[in-house]
Every structure is written in C-alpha cells, then in structure tokens.
Length: 443
Ligand code: LLP
Image 1 (cartoon, rainbow, N blue to C red):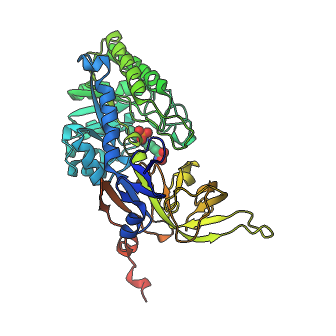
Image 2: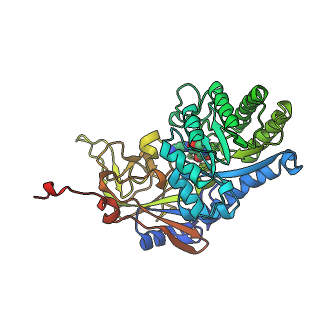
Image 3: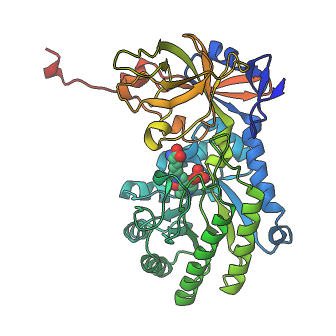
C-alpha cells in the first residue's frame, strides 16, 4: 500500500488498485454500479474537526474572548447521511431553501443551529422559513420588508455585499458590482431599522463573497470589511449582533500543483481581525460564524465511472483527438462544463500504469461541452476500465440533472471496510414518472 495523492489519505494504491478507505473501487463499482459517488466518512469528519480545532486553538477563542460556531452549507452536498455526520460533529446547517431546512431538520439539526440563507426569496419561501422557526437571513431589502410583514423570526439577519471578493474562478465570485447577491450597506441599514421597529430581538449580519479561495489572507481582509460595516450600522442605529457570519469560501486544490489552503492560518488571521474589530467598533460579544461547504466534503468524494466507448484518433479524418466515453457526464458532474473546472482522474484499475497519451474524457450527453477532461495525459485505457474522478464530494451530486433523460447516480458512504448505499440510483419512475399527458393527446 502506498500513499497515492497528497491530501487524500483515505485513498490508497494497493497492488495497483485504487482503494477508498478499505474498499476497492472495483468492488464499489461492481456492487453499486456506475456512475457512483463514493464518500469517505473518515475524511468528512477529519475536515470538520480540522476547521473546528483551527477555531478552538486561536488565542482569542481559546481564552474565551470570542465565541464561534461552524455551520455546513447544505447545498455543497445535501445527502442526509452526510448531514447526519456533520450534525454528529456538532456543526450547524446553512440552508438555501425550504427543502434544505427540511433536510437539516430530518438530519437532527436543532432549530437554533439552522440558518436559512436563501437569495431572491419568494413569499412562500419566507413564510416557510418563519413557520420552521429557524433564523432567517435575507439578501434584499424587499425580502426583509416582506418577511417582517408576515411575521417575526427568532433571529433576523441580512446579507450585505461588502464590495470585496476573492477567488479566481469567474463563476465563483459572489460580491462586487457584478454580483446578484446581497444588499448595499444603505439598504441593509434600512432592513435593520425595520426589524428593530418590528420588535425582532436577535440580529445577525452575513456575507458570502466568493468560493474556492486558497489565499489565507483573504478571509481576514473580508472579515475586516464586514466588521467595519457592522460598526457603522451599530453607530447609526445602536443595534448589537448575535452573530457576524463571514460565509464559506474555504478552497481546496483541484490540481496536483495547486497550493493547499492553510486553514489554521486562514482561521487564525480571521479570528484576530474579528476580535480587533469587535473591540474597535464596540460590537459586544457577537459569535463569529463560518459556513463552509466545499472544504468539508469536497475532497472526500470520488466519482467512479466506467469506460463505455473509445474513439481513437483518426488523423486523416475530421477527428484529430482521441475520445474516451464514460458513463458519467455533465448530467452527473456539471463543474467541468459549467466552469471549465479541473478534476484529477485516476485509472482505478491500474494506478501503476504510466501516463502515455492525451485523451479527452467525455460523457454520453448530446452537447460538446460534455467533456469531463480535455486532452488529459492518461495511461492506455480500454473499454470496461474504471476511472475515478477526484474531489467530487461538493457540488457534484448536488448539481447533477436528468438532462438527456438520464438517471442521477447512486451515492455510497465508505467507512473503514464498510460501504453503504446512501442514495439509490434513479430509475425510470424518478426520471419520467412525473409526466402527465392530457387525455386529448392520448388518442
Ligand atoms: N454560504 C452561502 C450563502 C453560499 O451560497 C455558499 C455557496 C456557501 C456558504 C458555501 O461556500 P463554499 O464554502 O462551498 O465555497 N457550484 C460551485 C460553488 C457554488 C457555491 C455557492 N454558494 C462549484 O461547483 O464550485
């Protein structure tokens, strides 16, 4: 057994075969079919503990000067078993919509550890949030007005666009002038005025400015900005915040040569700035909230897919490339098609094989963006071989679809030598069973 890939200790090379914890990828594929997402329970717990202890060991938190809480962004992976693991690790849940509130409750998160942070809410969604009795975070003055007309949440929070953003992927920038998210400082201020008038007792302040950020300094810089905004609000209308939430965004390296985020450093710098801001702006004792998604589950997931069709390069014809067609595609993993995202790909059946040839790994969908990897240097592959696409635990299954009338894949949780199904593969019933044909068209 040898170490396979940095930062992925739950994966190993045993005699050339890929193992996820103590189960071989081939066994997973044979037992559960492909494509299948397999998650390492161990890695999810390790990731959660790493962020929790990074927080706990900062001087300010360990001395009790600052309080903090870690929430999990359910949208990264909404599987109930994964939610249960993270609830068991004592995290809270950040829910993007009614069904995520419902999932968080089913996974056992208590109401006071669920934050409902939708964007561009409908009235129905706001009412659902109120009925669930969870903290509600709105991202517009409009939603604030509508929410407060319908009722009073136990905690009211607003998402501000602080005009600072990080991250390198264009699609993952969530603040600044091109971002649809959050509200201006002036409108947020107005929202809090209304909440105060309505008699809401507890208030929070929130931002989420970008995703997959690998720069340790960014989080502190963004927090500094948010605290200054909190200070300005406090000064103008005299409110105190129960929490100040700096959002998610902790990145993971998708490429082997990309830097690994030093999460301890990022957290340490952030908490330091947070403590200084709280003192400077006389903010009382607000909790620092972090709500990562990707960092907790991203590198814990592997997508297993089997090669179905190989089209070799045919130099004298139009096709100057070799295409390796697998049973996963953009309907299974959308990130490459949507953001040009890179995921490492391993030949699970023979990890010791030398990479010899550039091929494109493509799916079965009728779109030419359905390419999971373009011109990737890989070993010689044959139809029937099994590939593993790494770092697919976050925004993998969650962004899958039924496009081309395809089934969403199965999900499996690996824990030591155990592999358990945690979401069944869809069948025809799920894919087409909800369609209705008016009688007049049946003739
Ligand atoms: N909080 C809120 C309000 C969010 O909208 C998000 C992610 C998070 C927390 C967690 O962010 P993270 O820690 O995972 O960066 N589909 C994209 C990622 C979109 C993230 C959307 N919001 C991808 O595949 O990379």
